[in-house]
Length: 178
Image (tube, rainbow, N blue to C red; front, side):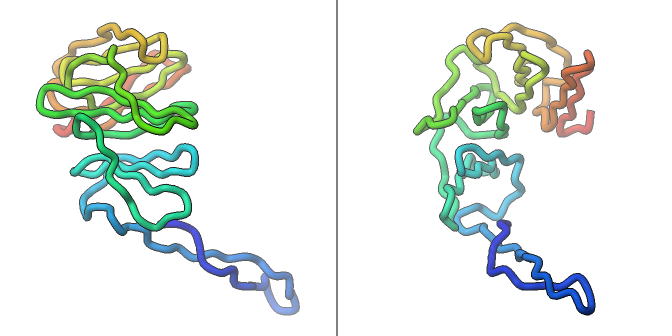
């Protein structure tokens, strides 16, 4: 949905004729598959969303979603600072892609683990990547990765990964509810 439509003058009560702008919502689903979305993020006027079929973009000023071609199937999308990151999972393989402010296309982070990737979050100055082979951490914005955990929790896709910069806790949930 998008806020839009003509402004309608409204008053606060009897005798008050001060106009207040009220907007309406407009559906924007053309081109987007009718499946559950597993995340969305916005950068540089473009809204990105992940559906079961992959990554989709809604460019600014348009009303139609277009599929974004990636070498692997997108599993989640998140914005961190001025970049969009897309995790990908195709069976036991996957990867991590990023798009910076002003970039024309997503680029693979070649240093990312060759494992199905499901979630990415920033914790302080680190990036944390949940994959099918464990939790990985990068202290250099994805140039290198080190294993942080190989807990059995990561044997199934992680749907949610939350980290607090002020705390030492990292919370995650998988499809089993763990």
